[in-house]
Length: 446
Image 1 (tube, rainbow, N blue to C red):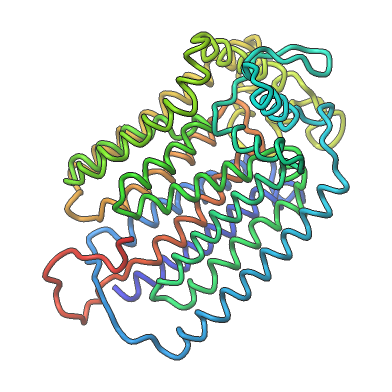
Image 2 (cartoon, rainbow, N blue to C red; image 1 turned 180 degrees about the horizontal axis):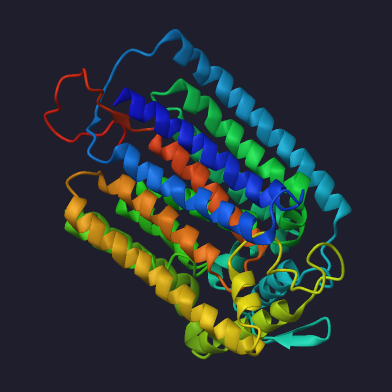
């Protein structure tokens, strides 16, 4: 068992490195081509989830209370100070970036659109009326938690990008504090290093993600959700799931598997509290104030995805190794390039529609397959470990087959990996030479 733990921990680190290298280095340095890089990113991501299942499958998770060693006590002081220093350093980078890179709709309409929604809300207007910007008119597709937090920035007149970075920082602090309960001192040290390094890689390689999008906030939501999956409080789980569900659609096809696992594993009260919390938050923050006033905004917003996809599938690069190919399909991520090049006899919209169907089929298929696996193996693995692993595997498939694989979307997958790495380290496995367990207990439950 000890050998298995060591091997899987090494694999975790390897897949984290490969996932980040594929996103930030291999393709940009022309070490890997579009196809090879996309597959490297996908495989390193999905294999992280598989490795998590392998590490905990058939193993006993124990509850152990023992006196902290001197090294552990020192780490409780040194690590927090180092992590605070790392966050401070990141915020100095943000300050420099936000000063240099203004908010301009001609570069990206994401933040300007959010600002319009926030201003309308504060002025007592209906936020979801169509928006005219840079010579075109669009129906807003953003759900409530995608833009509501930025109303704070609009009200107090500060840069809205500080909202994104602050939410990510809060999620990172949550993970870091929880990781201090890990029995493995090496992983306790790696968690803050990975969190700070993962963010700095974005700054030094694709700073536009921090300056032009709000994706770091979405990553923060998903990091919180991963921590929530390891807590038995259904209200907390429902809160974090609501943040994710009301910001991006990414996890919606996985949620039935989440409910199914809690139900058959006997944690039904937890499930009911979670569902009630999600419904309450969705009703209060989206359905009553916005959707009930115009039920068509969901459909009209959904239809804009087709026009947006057509734009990206026809927006060609004017230089580089992928000259005269769509920029967002040939940026090193996703499988959309394959459908673009292999179905050239079809018009663009037809190719997009086929890929959307494949995406839907595979996303549902992987959740069904994992649900069947869990039914037969549920006595062999803790339900919380399975929830984390299944979500990572599902998200890997979802992002790999998305019809416009924006680079900024992929950073959420990276930070989900880091969140799972931090959370799984809180569980202690019983070694072969230890006394047989009386029950399948856990080291940390909250």
